[in-house]
Image 1: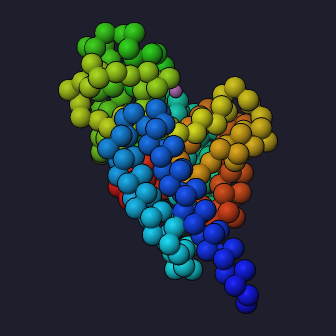
Image 2: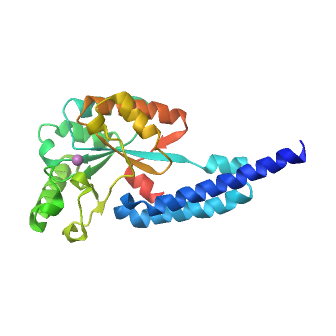
Image 3: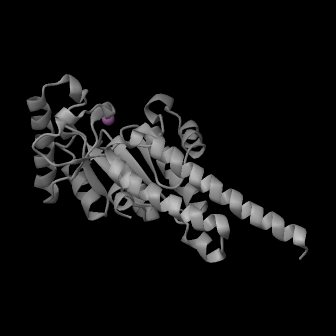
Length: 250
Ligand code: NI
């Protein structure tokens, strides 16, 4: 192998390092990480440190260590038909996701909530009704969040520790009596708007990178179809699917 080729390889490794570092800085700057700032900072710090090593030489071992992970999240359910279809598809594929449940949709769908827990998915709180929480009074918000906590606890025996506010609408005054971690997202699938599985998949695939939290809704058939197609596509690209909690802890 000539000197020229080696030079190109070193340059490629250096560029890869710079790209990774650049991605980490972009990630740190993204406003959507509000509620995850501590964990996000830790991950970005890890990536930045890792990029430093990669800029010198990116060995095969390093390449294998570069794990690609993504957390799919589903809001506004459970839905008797579509959530069931999603759970069936995820079970078939051995994939774990995160559900943010709306209190008012739980009644009559207890069996689905039970399945989520039994099949290893993470269950979070999406408040009781789909209203912008900063427009409601603090007391009303806390009651709505707490009521949903209790409904889920009655079924699964555990209180959710994560909250996704409807519309991502939240401020510090709404910390409540409950010490929940607020989770936003980094990729919006726009599934509610697109209502077309192919377009949803395309929209997510052109944005996705490791460490992303993808926002979807398990109340539309097109979203469920898109989610399962995404799982199949991204698995082939080497992605692993984790819950929001696993993403934050790792
Ligand atoms: Ni929602």
